[in-house]
Length: 301
Image (cartoon, rainbow, N blue to C red):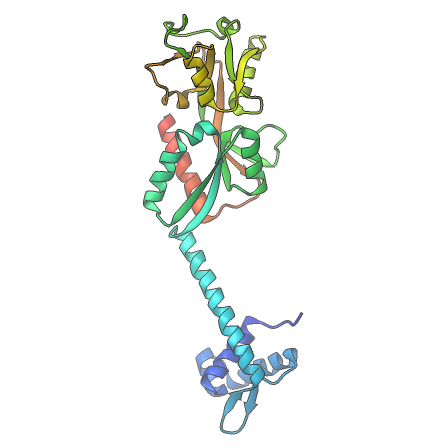
């Protein structure tokens, strides 16, 4: 691989444009001998003559013309890339992806994205709405810049977790259910009810299983589903009792469903930012991460 420096290329272009070593030296604020030395060294490295030299003129050779064309194109690309990076640093442009859980994607994330983009319309935000395992994978592999997720399992030691708020769950049932009139429910009271729970592998299912386990109880589902809206439809139809995160409960149709708090808030999960160790965020992603953390902290407070 031929080794040459940007200084040599810029010197070559200055000579090619001015057709003079003296004028090129004045433009570059160096001595004419320094210009001659740079051109000579560049020619030695390339193995070709770049200029026809006479006492009256300096004219690029055919090889010099080719180098000049290629160098100008490369510099245009370099300047374009630099301009783009400056725009990204100033949040005038940029694109990144956030991985999140379905309950977050359906509630708190879209308004936050809209508010951020209102101030930075050139920034595009993508979203991966997926169960916990898939969302964590997206963060770990770099498909997503960071995640708004529940606490990463211990197996993911390469991921950092910054908690933002605690999201507890409520019991949900049809308005005509015998327990719907209660002001609160203890978890052991529900173990004999037909339970409608998320599928294994979701953060809400892990929260449900852990909550029952703390009472020495095991969940025996009547129905399992990946989508919370499916579970709510089953609850509305009278198939049993389900559990949804409190942030999702605001979307319930209260004319058909009743949300009842759980005494002692035994069913909860910590929600926060998940990010790989040692990986820097782009300016846009870092700005949105900070904006999201401040927004959620203010709402939780």
